[in-house]
Image (tube, chains in turn red, brown):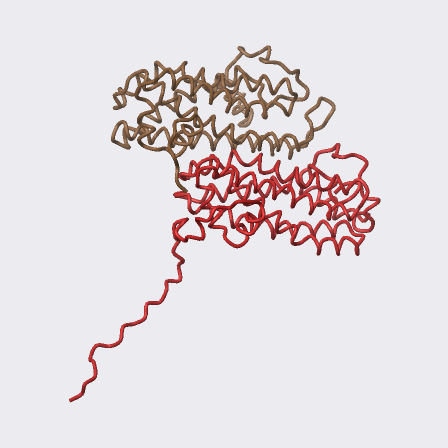
Length: 257
Length: 240
């Protein structure tokens, strides 16, 4: 008699290609409190879900404060590197403008993010939204510090303002993409029915941040005035920079940026 | 992320914006003095701050004037049409009281004002980055169009969201989308008719560099919005 089992072996269950979004705090690691700024930096980079979970807990204001501290510190450091291209007054002006610009952009856009969040049916509280924006800025500024050595190296080896401007813009775009990924991920846990509002807000935030670089110019190059006297849209300003032959040649002779 | 529902003004605005059915329904039931006060504050602050940003392009004083005028239009439209709207509702199939009508319309204006308020830093930033509007400065058509389009987009967005929430409330109250739509259209028609004329009387809002800064134009009560619209149309079509 044949003793083989007529029932075929079970087909192994293949994990679905669509990731299932586990609720926050499911893993014990995510429930670990975040006691200080160093742990916050590590958590933002390695365990973003832990940050998101802690933002929903009572007393998350301290975490938001910690993230703001990181933003200020990191953007000041990156600002010094940006200012090292022109040296002189730009060594203190550039950090001040980058930190101020980053914070100002988020303050301008924060109320509309809260409104969009509410309209999308999300249950997130104001402090959670502030925390998500804090996380976005913190991740952006941490990444910019990561790019700082590269930026410094280039700033010491080139005279071209346009080139340096483009390089910092690329770094900013990469940092912003990662920061926004954190924000979108946090938003996905807020029971929102739609992400259309968030997408609109992201466009607004990017435009405001880009305009801020023009509103607070010069950030990389030198100028007699701390802030520009004339007002321009960033696209027309960038066009002017690209069309000006001096801009690419020598940063000393180019007033704005 | 979980919400802890505690009654604070920020939470109330949040629930209104979400369109939480229970909260919205309770909105027009009882506690009208508290509700009126809440609406008044949100309209004054929200529409006021947006108005300040709008008028600031011409001059700070113009900003102050528009900060007063924009909330005034919303409040005057609500109370100017209160009686008409309260009559229209039962006639169009929704049996609610005068008080409930006022609160429902105020709710929609409160939502619009909260949205306007949230966009006021953005509007102020756009204006701050634009060339100042002074008598000796030529404003390019592109700048003027950008500012105008920003205002139109923000105000339209606020208005659309407010009316979407209003129709949700009307649907809950009537139990029928047909009645809710009918009442909303009736109310909208009346409010737009009065609101346009109020805006005409209370002009200028953005202002013009060659005209003085003033709360009301000397010709505020001469002509009306629809007459002006008719004349503009006639000019476009070359009709004498």
